[in-house]
Image (cartoon, rainbow, N blue to C red; front, side):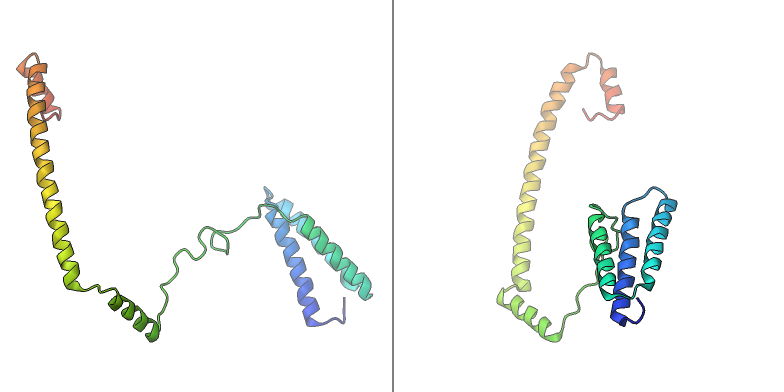
Length: 172
Protein backbone atom coordinates (compact mmCIF):
# COMPACT_ATOMS: atom_id res chain seq x y z
CA UNK A 1 0.00 0.00 0.00
CA UNK A 2 2.94 2.23 -0.54
CA UNK A 3 2.58 5.38 -2.57
CA UNK A 4 -0.94 6.25 -1.45
CA UNK A 5 -2.19 9.49 0.00
CA UNK A 6 -2.08 10.52 3.63
CA UNK A 7 -5.89 10.22 3.83
CA UNK A 8 -5.67 6.61 2.63
CA UNK A 9 -3.10 5.80 5.30
CA UNK A 10 -5.28 7.40 7.98
CA UNK A 11 -8.26 5.35 6.75
CA UNK A 12 -6.24 2.13 6.97
CA UNK A 13 -5.06 3.06 10.47
CA UNK A 14 -8.67 3.76 11.45
CA UNK A 15 -9.72 0.39 10.05
CA UNK A 16 -6.97 -1.31 12.08
CA UNK A 17 -7.96 0.55 15.24
CA UNK A 18 -11.66 -0.25 14.79
CA UNK A 19 -10.77 -3.93 14.25
CA UNK A 20 -8.72 -3.99 17.46
CA UNK A 21 -11.42 -2.18 19.45
CA UNK A 22 -14.07 -4.54 18.10
CA UNK A 23 -11.96 -7.46 19.23
CA UNK A 24 -11.85 -5.83 22.67
CA UNK A 25 -15.60 -5.19 22.64
CA UNK A 26 -16.35 -8.89 22.23
CA UNK A 27 -15.88 -8.95 25.99
CA UNK A 28 -13.24 -11.60 26.38
CA UNK A 29 -12.64 -12.93 29.85
CA UNK A 30 -8.88 -12.53 29.69
CA UNK A 31 -6.45 -10.13 28.11
CA UNK A 32 -4.58 -13.07 26.53
CA UNK A 33 -7.56 -13.89 24.29
CA UNK A 34 -7.79 -10.29 23.15
CA UNK A 35 -4.02 -10.06 22.55
CA UNK A 36 -4.18 -13.23 20.45
CA UNK A 37 -6.89 -11.73 18.22
CA UNK A 38 -5.02 -8.43 17.94
CA UNK A 39 -1.89 -10.33 16.85
CA UNK A 40 -3.90 -12.10 14.13
CA UNK A 41 -5.36 -8.78 12.96
CA UNK A 42 -1.88 -7.23 12.95
CA UNK A 43 -0.46 -10.09 10.84
CA UNK A 44 -3.30 -9.66 8.30
CA UNK A 45 -2.57 -5.94 8.01
CA UNK A 46 1.18 -6.59 7.75
CA UNK A 47 0.59 -9.12 4.94
CA UNK A 48 -1.51 -6.59 3.02
CA UNK A 49 1.09 -3.84 3.46
CA UNK A 50 2.91 -4.74 0.22
CA UNK A 51 -0.16 -4.83 -2.04
CA UNK A 52 0.33 -2.55 -5.03
CA UNK A 53 -2.69 -3.23 -7.29
CA UNK A 54 -5.42 -0.65 -6.52
CA UNK A 55 -8.20 -3.18 -7.24
CA UNK A 56 -6.66 -5.72 -4.87
CA UNK A 57 -6.29 -3.05 -2.20
CA UNK A 58 -9.91 -1.90 -2.54
CA UNK A 59 -11.11 -5.54 -2.49
CA UNK A 60 -9.01 -6.19 0.65
CA UNK A 61 -10.43 -3.05 2.34
CA UNK A 62 -13.99 -4.08 1.39
CA UNK A 63 -13.38 -7.55 2.78
CA UNK A 64 -12.09 -6.14 6.08
CA UNK A 65 -15.04 -3.71 6.32
CA UNK A 66 -17.48 -6.59 5.71
CA UNK A 67 -15.77 -8.72 8.36
CA UNK A 68 -15.82 -5.78 10.77
CA UNK A 69 -19.53 -5.14 10.15
CA UNK A 70 -20.39 -8.85 10.44
CA UNK A 71 -18.47 -9.30 13.69
CA UNK A 72 -19.67 -6.07 15.31
CA UNK A 73 -20.70 -6.90 18.86
CA UNK A 74 -24.38 -6.33 19.61
CA UNK A 75 -23.62 -4.95 23.06
CA UNK A 76 -20.19 -3.33 23.03
CA UNK A 77 -18.46 -2.11 26.17
CA UNK A 78 -19.18 1.59 26.69
CA UNK A 79 -17.00 3.15 29.33
CA UNK A 80 -18.94 5.35 31.78
CA UNK A 81 -17.47 8.71 30.80
CA UNK A 82 -17.50 8.07 27.05
CA UNK A 83 -20.41 9.23 24.84
CA UNK A 84 -23.30 6.89 25.53
CA UNK A 85 -21.95 5.95 28.97
CA UNK A 86 -23.85 6.47 32.19
CA UNK A 87 -21.55 9.25 33.44
CA UNK A 88 -21.18 11.10 30.12
CA UNK A 89 -21.61 14.84 30.77
CA UNK A 90 -23.15 14.09 34.19
CA UNK A 91 -21.80 17.19 35.92
CA UNK A 92 -21.65 19.73 33.14
CA UNK A 93 -20.71 23.30 34.02
CA UNK A 94 -23.56 25.80 33.88
CA UNK A 95 -23.97 27.62 30.56
CA UNK A 96 -22.30 30.99 30.20
CA UNK A 97 -24.89 33.58 29.21
CA UNK A 98 -24.22 36.64 27.11
CA UNK A 99 -25.47 40.08 28.10
CA UNK A 100 -28.29 39.82 25.53
CA UNK A 101 -29.46 36.50 26.99
CA UNK A 102 -29.47 37.97 30.51
CA UNK A 103 -31.50 40.94 29.25
CA UNK A 104 -34.00 38.55 27.64
CA UNK A 105 -34.38 36.59 30.88
CA UNK A 106 -34.87 39.83 32.87
CA UNK A 107 -37.50 40.98 30.38
CA UNK A 108 -39.28 37.63 30.75
CA UNK A 109 -39.26 37.92 34.55
CA UNK A 110 -40.72 41.42 34.35
CA UNK A 111 -43.42 40.22 31.96
CA UNK A 112 -44.50 37.62 34.54
CA UNK A 113 -45.06 40.37 37.17
CA UNK A 114 -43.13 38.48 39.79
CA UNK A 115 -42.38 41.09 42.39
CA UNK A 116 -41.05 40.69 45.88
CA UNK A 117 -44.14 42.24 47.46
CA UNK A 118 -46.46 39.80 45.70
CA UNK A 119 -44.30 36.85 46.74
CA UNK A 120 -44.24 38.09 50.33
CA UNK A 121 -48.05 38.35 50.50
CA UNK A 122 -48.40 34.83 49.07
CA UNK A 123 -45.89 33.54 51.61
CA UNK A 124 -47.79 35.10 54.53
CA UNK A 125 -51.05 33.57 53.28
CA UNK A 126 -49.40 30.17 53.00
CA UNK A 127 -47.88 30.55 56.48
CA UNK A 128 -51.29 31.39 58.00
CA UNK A 129 -52.85 28.34 56.31
CA UNK A 130 -50.09 26.08 57.62
CA UNK A 131 -50.53 27.46 61.14
CA UNK A 132 -54.30 26.75 61.05
CA UNK A 133 -53.62 23.20 59.87
CA UNK A 134 -51.06 22.68 62.64
CA UNK A 135 -53.56 23.85 65.30
CA UNK A 136 -56.24 21.56 63.86
CA UNK A 137 -53.81 18.61 63.91
CA UNK A 138 -52.89 19.37 67.54
CA UNK A 139 -56.58 19.31 68.51
CA UNK A 140 -57.11 15.98 66.75
CA UNK A 141 -53.98 14.55 68.42
CA UNK A 142 -55.14 15.69 71.85
CA UNK A 143 -58.59 14.12 71.37
CA UNK A 144 -57.03 10.91 70.10
CA UNK A 145 -54.59 10.79 73.02
CA UNK A 146 -57.35 11.16 75.62
CA UNK A 147 -59.38 8.46 73.87
CA UNK A 148 -56.47 6.04 73.85
CA UNK A 149 -55.49 6.95 77.41
CA UNK A 150 -58.95 5.87 78.56
CA UNK A 151 -58.82 2.75 76.43
CA UNK A 152 -55.31 1.75 77.57
CA UNK A 153 -56.13 2.42 81.21
CA UNK A 154 -58.74 -0.36 81.08
CA UNK A 155 -56.46 -2.85 79.32
CA UNK A 156 -53.77 -3.11 82.02
CA UNK A 157 -54.65 -5.43 84.88
CA UNK A 158 -52.14 -3.91 87.29
CA UNK A 159 -50.63 -0.47 87.56
CA UNK A 160 -47.17 -2.09 87.37
CA UNK A 161 -47.91 -3.34 83.84
CA UNK A 162 -48.77 0.18 82.78
CA UNK A 163 -45.56 1.56 84.33
CA UNK A 164 -43.46 -1.11 82.59
CA UNK A 165 -45.10 -0.25 79.27
CA UNK A 166 -44.36 3.43 79.74
CA UNK A 167 -40.72 2.69 80.69
CA UNK A 168 -40.28 0.63 77.52
CA UNK A 169 -41.31 3.59 75.37
CA UNK A 170 -45.08 3.55 75.43
CA UNK A 171 -46.77 6.90 75.95
CA UNK A 172 -50.01 5.67 77.41
